[in-house]
Image (cartoon, rainbow, N blue to C red; front, side, top):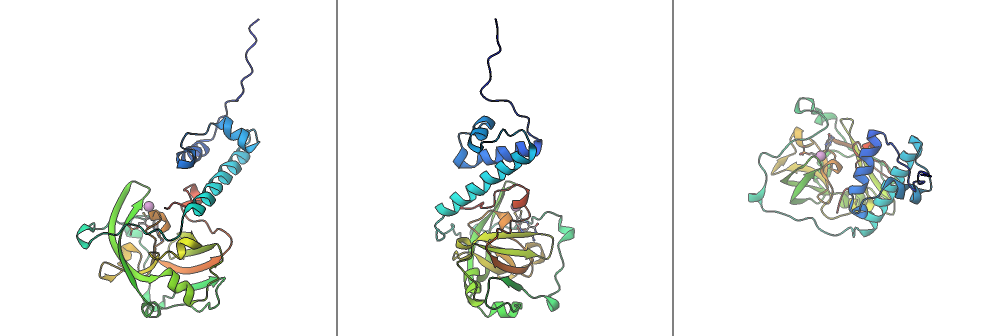
Length: 256
Ligand SMILES: Nc1nc2c(c(=O)[nH]1)N[C@H]1C(S)=C(S)[C@@H](COP(=O)(O)O)O[C@H]1N2
Ligand SMILES: [Mo]
């Protein structure tokens, strides 16, 4: 009798979005060997039949990976810096919309709001920010879409700013809201990294609209999408605020 052998691992059909997410999780170096759906079922103790459950497991794994990476990241390792001659000109523009839709921020009414676990929640003007100590670095911005470019950003180290507003630096996250629908967030060690800037300048001049006028976060230890432009609010807290791309399946940590 040819009894069909009972297969140890059942084939599971994933939704296309789940398949993509699984592939992106596998691509991360902690799972470089690849992880079969069967192995995942064993690790997670669920049969992965039900879409909601699959999503939960994938997200839990992604969050776990973030925690391991955050633990490995010293918080002080410097990103490489470059010379003026190595700068990319013109510097590329990128956003989830085209150049025609760059938000127009009115400087006369602009202020940077501060909220969450901070002592002083008064909003900041650009002049106020310019009076704080400044720093300039020529670094590489790397976009997940497959390009990178070297540019010069100047502004206030985010650490200096957080100290000035009396932020609780034992909190886990710093989040950012933008004048477009964009948002993002950083772990506290990255927020306190010496090269993480509230950037006011690109090259020798005030940030032009396409690069995030009047203020962007420049984080050379993170991928491009964790460098929000047109920032209107900074907040400190213990709940992960996610981000525009992060919440669509891009790895939240995305850094070195
Ligand atoms: N407000 C806002 N910030 C944003 C984005 C966006 O769409 N809106 N795109 C991000 C992405 S994906 C990249 S690669 C960089 C691009 O920065 P650049 O235009 O200065 O090259 O901005 C990031 N910050
Ligand atoms: Mo990007």
